[in-house]
Length: 158
Image (cartoon, rainbow, N blue to C red):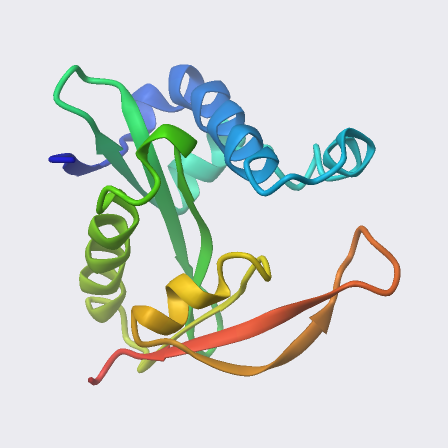
């Protein structure tokens, strides 16, 4: 699928935030998680207008102008963090995720750090490994007791 990647602006934050929130929730549900578990993740799967203003949000727009996916990165104290990368389920496997990843890496390289770090959903880890990231460990889920998430890193100097 051919998409256009553009950086979201603060002037569209109020309108875009609920669109991105709904996309996060549909993409998470795509992996077959139980409805009660998805409900527990509702707050974590919410994009606020302030997130769009504060962080760098890259939006993948389909030819009809719809949102096919988005990525969100931010500068931390000692690294760049990928906070979100979500693809509309109907657009999964079409290159949208790769396009967003590549755009996020270009943006991350403009920041003063050598590494992009993030926690991944276990289902998405193979995608990130394919993109060149490596697992550096595990972190406990903040929502589900006993669940761990792969911690990932990507060398921005590569």
